[in-house]
Amino acid sequence: MIWSFVKIALFLLIVAGLTMGAAALSDSGEAIRIVALGQEFNFGALQAVILLLIVVAVLWVVFKVVGFLVAFLRFVTGDETAISRYFDRNRERKGYQALAEGMLAIASGEARLAMSKAAKAERYLRRPDLTNLLTAQAAEMNGDQRRAETVYRRMLSDPRTRFVGIRGLLTQKLTDGDTDTALKLAQKAFALNPKHPDVQNTLFRLQTESGDWKGARDVLLAKMRQGEIPKDVHKRRDAVLALQEARVVLDKDSSLEAREAAIAANKSSPDLIPAAAMAAKAYADQGNTKAATRVLLKAWEAQPHPDLASVYAALEPSESASERLARFEKLLSLRPDHEETKLLRAELSIAAEDFPAARRALGTLAETHPTTRTLTLMAAIERGEGADEAVVRGWLTRAVTAPRGKQWCCDKCQNIQAEWAPVCDNCGGFDTLSWREPTSGGVPLPNGAEMLPLIVGAGKPKPEAAFDITPPDAEDAAEKGEK
Image (tube, rainbow, N blue to C red; front, top):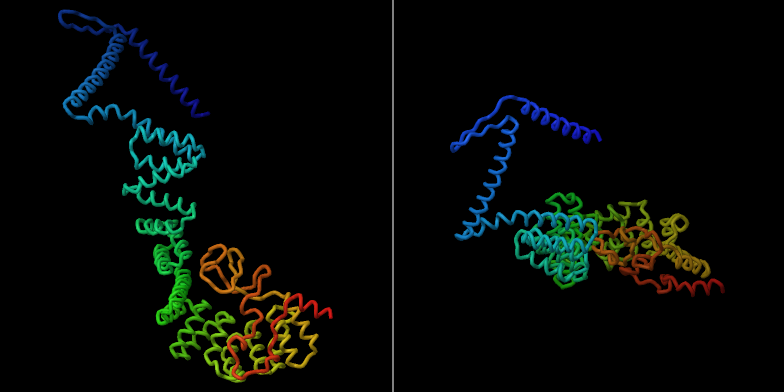
């Protein structure tokens, strides 16, 4: 409001000044005499000023007409750009105005208006590098995917718009579910602009979903070099990709390459359990038991896991149960208070038929943290100590409905998987599986109730009935419990 008042005041001052000036000139007695072609003209001061303004206006019109005539003459003599420039200024103004209105229409969600303004801008400007993107976006908003694809393909021929055209086609293919074509387009977009974060993420996701682990490692390295991810995160994820590379190579029966890849993955991230287990197996296949033991001990110290214990036991498959228990002391002493250590010690003691030691190893786990595995071990201990069949079946009945304990769970969607994988089977998240207890109950998975000596084999054969502790079905357990 203040600015409006100031503008009105200025306008009034200018009008008053002009009025006073005109009055002063009118009251002035001085005159201007002009003699031309034998004629004499006398003008007052005010008349002279008005005449001067008229002369200036006439001269401006004359110059414009002369400019147009010169442009027309140059056009007639062959210079096509002179007259076209003269008339194209208005076309450009209308074109840029339509372009701006089309962009505003897209931002406001008006599909039909955006299409109309895009066509108008294209007609006036004739600048496809400016109008193609507007036309394609307006077509997509209007649901005309075929027209949008046609425009995106036209953009591929211009180096200035090639990247935008590829990204547009990439988005369309992802929407249509054509991941094979989308992967090829993402690779082309990454080659044109390797620093684009969205292209990096899209290409990385498509590569991990399709199993292109080597390509995913290259993209991950580019992200680290550009500061998109920290070095420690890159190190961990690169180890995950290297491990999956090793698995693929192992599936192709190229054991040498698989061993080298597994060892490299373990060196990159020693706390990655699957990498440690596979690297230990690779060292064992080479006959380097010492290196395999070192890898397993380091991984167990970071996070105890049944897979590590299985590989550690398999290093000496022919040893007796007591010899195995003695050899495992080196592993068990690293994390003596960890739950997995207690469970493992109990399993080994059961295999050695030292049931009191197994009970001491479990401690109060059956009461404080009852899981299928813990309760199954308690059933084995009771049977080994000669308890009644009803007591044993009571533990097994509880084991059927107890939580399964730690499993491979996705931190993103809480999906439970039987085996570790770099990509979640449910949500496609990369490196989201962690060894923990699920937030809700899950199906029975490996390393739940099975006993380690039965998995890797014991040195001395035991009576079959002594270790037949597989939990019965829930219905059988309930029926026999009632009897």
